[in-house]
Amino acid sequence: MAETIGFSTKLIKETVTVDEQTGAANVPVYLSSTFHQKDFDNYGKYDYSRSGNPTRDALEEAIAALEGGVRGFAFASGMAAISTAFLLLSKGDHAVVPKNVYGGTFRILTQVLGRFGIEHTFVDTTNLQEVEQAIQPNTKVIYVETPSNPTLYVTDLRAIVKLAKAHRCLTFVDNTFMTPVFQRPLEFGADLVLHSATKFISGHSDVVAGLAVAGSEELAKKLYFLQNALGAILGVQDSWLLLRGLKTLDVRIRKSADSAQKVAEFFEKQPEVRQVFYPGLQNHPGAKLHAGQAASGGAVLSFELKDEASARTFVNHVKLPVFAVSLGAVESILSYPPRMSHAELNEEERVKAGIGSGLLRLSVGLEDAEDLIQDFSNALAYVRDQERFAVGSGE
Image (cartoon, rainbow, N blue to C red; front, side, top):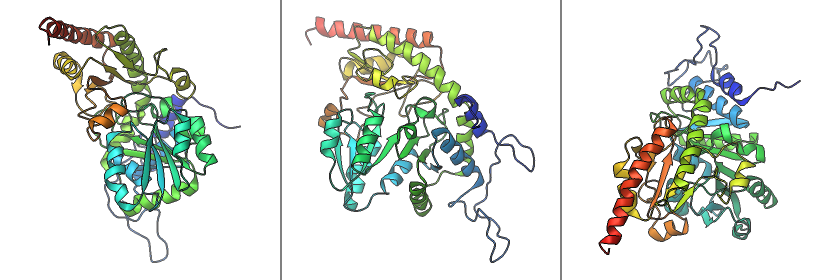
């Protein structure tokens, strides 16, 4: 009979490995670039740390088990993972990609891969008809972010996978926002899952890392070849730190998501806030779909104020969040996508992606939700005063 355990238990089981020789409850940090071989004919599992390292292996095995894949891969950054995945394509191949894709992914597609003859088409992946119309005879990959960054649009994973298989395409899913705690795309038939592990999996703003999990042995072999050939691996100490962060992922992201729900509901009632983007809200257009493929709305939301001036005023008067790029940390992080995560997009491209000049993205941390709400309420009072002054002065 197969063992049945809860995800929280599985997470600890996969990340706490007892060392057989010493009994240590933490995976050792193997600070070795090379490994002794017994003789000419008998080589061990490890020879050179670019090709494999016991500490990195423990991390890669853990994320593969948590995502339900056959093999995991740890990279030097989220973009290293994404770039390596796209290099599974060859000259003349084509990818279908969300039009509001993360700015770093947009950059690698438009400014790098195109030079090597790898083509792409940007579409609204929430519109299945638009996705299908973009598929060409040379299309090899449909790439998905769900929920998307920063507008939290929800894409139907089951439908995209079905469409991809019908056209003999692979499905790549960026699962950074949800993590395997809330969403596991391989269970819906996706072929590859990607993470900027810098975010929630690390959780402490102290590691830059990327992870990938392949759903088949064939794809895993191809990705390992590229990981080893290109060499953008995650260092040993960062692998150990990421394992440590992974151990507390479940409790961290659940608390943050609970607070995010409360904060989103608060913003939804504020007259200064034009729109709230959070799939945990009932009026979110993708709420029902998201609930069918994810266990929570997650810990990230975006909200739109009147314009850049209002956004500036809000940021200048909050006290608790850090104003910075990135997300997924123990501290709440507030960012301005038009000049941060999506600065690579020009104004026209941002408008098409639904990224207005007053849009702010909030990654909710581990502070008490009530304290965050009070802080945001105070900042909105300044926004309200500024907008009244602007009207009164005839601006």
